[in-house]
Image (tube, rainbow, N blue to C red; front, top):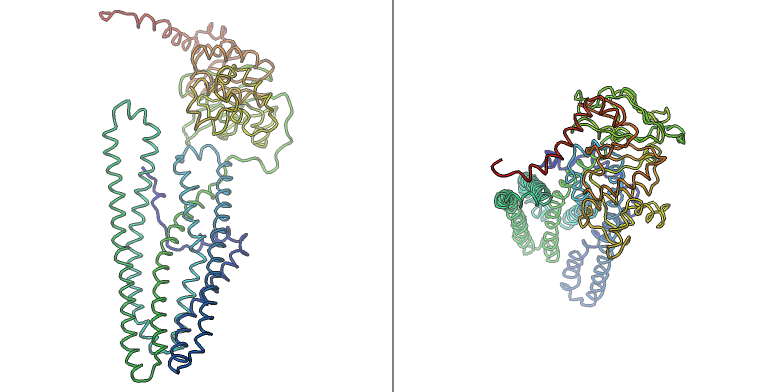
Length: 601
């Protein structure tokens, strides 16, 4: 389902938003100034041909002076050349400038997105955020490239034609412009209904995008549970809604543009009726009548263009409102204005009476206090929802604690720069993120200080070099989106190699071995025994086999730290850890019996 702000259209013009948009145009004001000069020049030269026609008829043809036509022909040619040059300059400058403005805007959005806290991405679906950077920015591109400046061309053209008409003959000018009230009414009707249809079309597009994203991502589930037919019917209903909304908009467009043409034809008929009579009476020259006919044809074209610009402006206002709402989202997790000196101590980590809630009042961690000494290996276990992963999120400052504090060598992590804090850690998550590029790129992640030898050494330490060597290009093999061509275990091994290549002082493993098979886990465990030597390690695990040889094990239950100790010590206490151990290993021991039991049993 689409969110409400995806369907809100906003006002056709919002001065506040336009001022902010003009801020992005300010660095390019010189180029836009030249474009405006080209627009004014183009409007001026396009007013010349009808008047030159008037001069040719009234001055030279009527008086039998063909010599003057040669001069007029050269003037016509000069007007055509100037029109071409001005239009080229206007189009080229506006398009180039528009692309530069859009480039700046996209970079501003991307820079802001990278600083936003993880909670923002928890609240906002990926598709919705991507729409801001793509579809909404493209709507502003139409405004910058063809709308906000080129609208002056239509205004100059309309004003220039009106002035010329009144200068030539005020009576016929009034006749020619007599249909303007009808044009205003038709335009108002079109805008009001087209705006409503535009909102509906945009809403249905959002629903189509949301439906496709959800179903393509979950295609395995759709096919497994044979839901193709039902989902096809759902998509058919959404697609029909989109089609019907578009058909409704087609009706209003089909009425508006012919209506403008008809009103233009009525104006032309009135010009010929009254102007022809005045010409026969000798109160109006024939050339002036012909010029009025030509000017009237040029007068109604900008009106149609202005109506089209209205749609561009309307879409841009709606998109800019959503974009600025994103840019105005405060950065909740940021480095302090004056961060403390970079910490180079041993790295003693301490949680001091930490409370935390993702939602106000719903605490997932309550009064948690523990210490991780430098070089110590600490395992964190507990049932699902006990708050294990939250510990990592708080330690990395993906979220800030609600109460209490977390310190490293006695310094509150909120007083440290984010770069200095996070550079201490190597984090391996259960779901490894791989990016487009090569295998080596995914281990190095753009850090040029990590050499090829470092990449190979890190891969070898976690035994990832074995499957990498079997790839066609080895470390230069291409990685598909999210590592789709690799198995879960292979992706996890690459994530291990990535973390180790950065040589962190603290290694954090969040269910890092839960998605790999037993053989792969043995390889990783073998590597970790060597890699954890001399390095602080915090391992969150579901499999107790992962943490049995840790120096200390923290047992969490319902957000509270319930037990602390070594493996044998905790088993001897016969508490929560002992219960978890019994449940896990009883299930493993009973599985073969269950599989081999007779049907009668």
